[in-house]
Image (cartoon, rainbow, N blue to C red; front, top):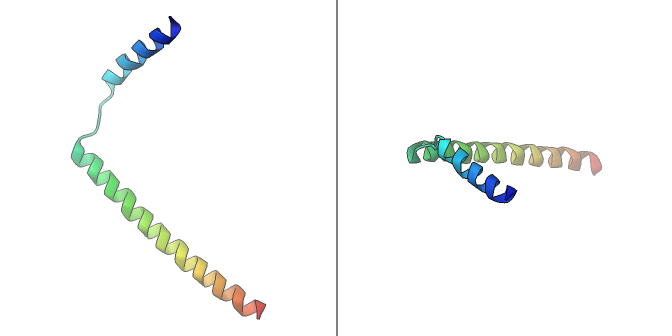
Length: 59
């Protein structure tokens, strides 16, 4: 019976949640994608630079 109580209480709690609107989700998704691109480009530049610097010292 504990499992059924848990499921019922979980369902009741989910009814109380304020779900975001579609536009808000789209905006946050774009923010995440743009941030991901910026961080990826930054890390690629740092990686390239460090590889170049280490390559100079190894030769």
